[in-house]
Amino acid sequence: MIDRLVSLKKFHRKYKRLPSYSEMLKLFGVSSKNAIFKIVGKWIEEGILKKENNKLSPTNRFFALPLLGTIRAGFPILAEENKEYLSLDEYLIADPQTSFLLKVRGDSLEGIGIFEGDIVIIERKKDALPGTVVLAQIDKEWTLKILKKDRIKRLIYLSAANPKYPAFYPKEELQIYGIVKAVVRKMN
Figure 1 (cartoon, one colour):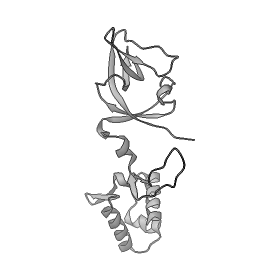
Figure 2: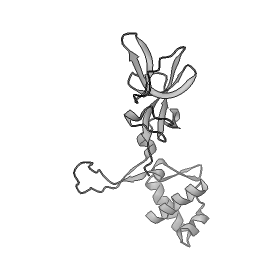
Figure 3: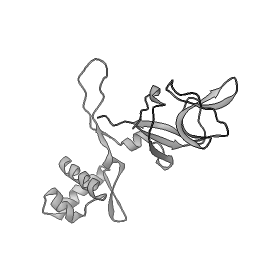
Figure 4: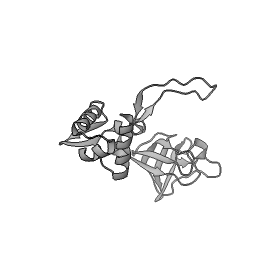
């Protein structure tokens, strides 16, 4: 059953759609549409697929990856395996309707672990607390920085997390468009 799901996911990745029942016959190497009907029924029961308007579509669980347990980053121990599934979308994105991705360019946030080439998940918000990493427009220039408040001058400004960059005080205006909710980095 797992091999068939892997085949189904590969088909979906390649064609950006689910196969028809006839295509599944060939894909899964079975000769009976009844067998396909039972396989699909099981996936619907498990929440991997759903039927909408008599059409199959994937659920978030279809794209989920197995979460096999926890692992210590300290002294080695045996990992405990588990049968849970985790959708990275659901884990990283609280509100998909107001979220989007940006690819980071530059080194101004390296001090807090955001590096060039990372993908940041931004949630659209106009308000943010000091200390939050924000997507902002300062004097008509877009940037990703840490929102700060100067307690003496009572001014809001942007700060880098790299000592080679100065504080960025707005000359005209500073607008917040979103906050960073997560950082995704692909390891080589």
